Length: 202
Image 1: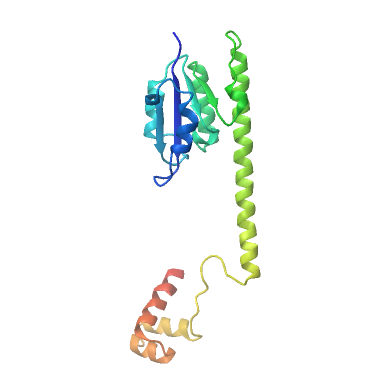
Image 2: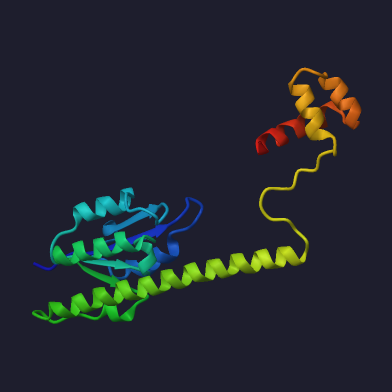
């Protein structure tokens, strides 16, 4: 009995559109009802569409996805699922990785093992590179901000010079809030806003 060709499509947020991936996989699937989808983050695999697809798949079936990161972004989980697919006799074909799309003659299952290893290797390299790129972009952003004189992180709290002494006296009941405001020449709304900010740093 010939296996069923499944498709899986995923975007990270509800606002994103699945159409592009759907168009890419629909030509390969046995029937469009076998295309499962999720609008969820790739950080974990507890996604409704993905889990329902796993339950529906059997030995001899094939799974088509547009790119490896549609499975998810967690390398270890993806590796685990690729191994699970292999054990259950399910073939994974990734449209963006032509090597994985080739048909394998019967009795040459070792080729699928090799292809799965290529998938993991390619995915790992891509994920690592993406992390390096993100770090580099962050570092460049910080450097640019510094040259423009911007302070990154928690803003510096600007307070009158007498603030600490007067604040302690106020909290000890030695002076009233009104006296405190008078001494530093601050309006009530500004005063309480500064108190809140100051107390958040304590």
